[in-house]
Image (tube, rainbow, N blue to C red; front, side, top):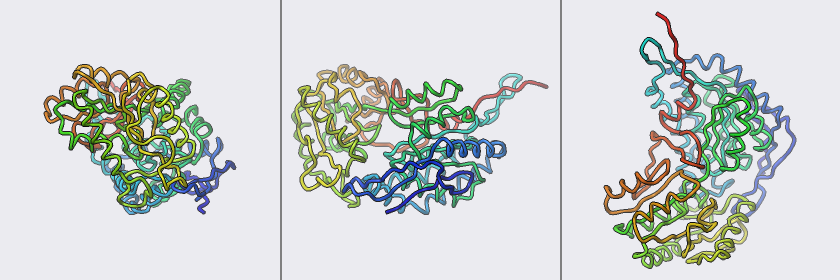
Length: 472
């Protein structure tokens, strides 16, 4: 069993002042595989102070210097991709395919930031004024458990590219992944205090980062409920805030779609990362004229999906992360049944033979209306709702009838038609016929899916403030 007792503060691994511990449970079989000592306000203060002191010099580094640091970080994380993927499989339960891709993308975040650093207009003229973009200050980064290292790296890379120093609070459920990340940051050889990481709970470490006046910027990825709380608390010191929150992403299958392609796309989007993804396409909006055909194809495809050991390369779905999350997903399945939706495949309880872990049957509901709880709220598990429509206009109306607007999907055989539909969907990103991994494009949501954008030039500019200087 792995024991983690340190944080990474001011370029060193330091013993936790906090004494509360948390057991780390492997979701595949519910066995305790580690224990982490959680930080407290004292640990958080030390990390913020280190970042504040380092900001004085780091904020004055050149674009070339920061580009070199980002290169060093890429090399440190790239050297541990396989280790990172293996730990993600064990601690989180992500499938091997997803975990390897996530670990690779984490390392590449630094190269992407380095690339876009040269595209940021750090200085330009506006009439008689010189307009400059300057790092906002110490950035507090609060990240979730569903792709821990990837979120850490994408946020850190953007903040460092801008010239900010950081204090990061990853999810306490991801402490083993965080430990590896800390080792990578240490190996990269950055100046002390530029990157600081504290293991701890959101209501302790996260709360202190949010209210501390020496933190100028918060970037948070997680639930909409917590995001609203962070936004409220950040107003006391007028922190700049980026929030990437929940989603209930629609996937419109148009009546001209090739279902041999649309159905696999719908399932890969709906069950992405064991269903534990804010961008999961969990509302499948299907033409009434093709509903029976879609239902038959989906049932056949889901029956063929392998649910099981996430370490096996051919496993499509692994377990849910914790018992709490497992119970949450099961409660939504029961709620769907109570409200009159019909189970096409799946349902309550673990798949046969997988009762030892937090496994959920991949579940698809039909006869769903958009006012049902399972169509309104983010479930964060492998549960897909099929909603039928008569006209294209109705499909778009259903897609937009949501508190969320993070991502959306369209399947069609006519790309021009698909783009016209996509342009009418209220969402930060729309994928037509396939997933497109374009880290240069901004990412973020409309409505209650968040505020601000990450990735690319937009992501770096979120850590910059604008100054106008006048004088001949």
